[in-house]
Image (tube, rainbow, N blue to C red; front, side, top):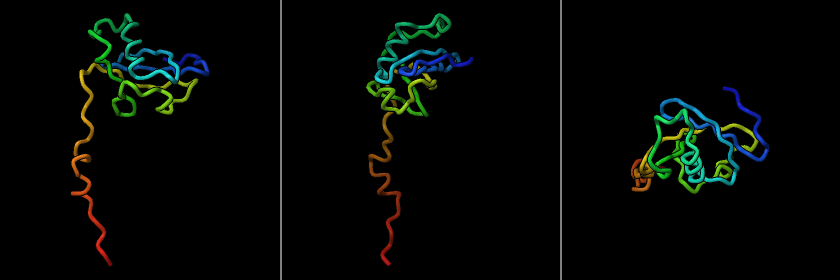
Length: 117
């Protein structure tokens, strides 16, 4: 599947489902992950019919291995306008918790301190 000509003020987002099915959508850099999830839900592709979800709020975008929070915009991610970017789209009720090891003092317990000379 080749990329289409992407307008210079838009980002062509190729979304991949867990099943491997893909679909491309055009978005502006100011649109958020929540906006994108709502748009995709409202315009669910026919070829994805067997993988439909009950509400937009459970659709989550994954970019470079990280779940995106609903308010993060494509522009804030540094995605270049006029290009195609790839993200995964998965149904998930809740986002995973942040790495609790770091917030609970993991680094202070597991990083050695420099000994005085």
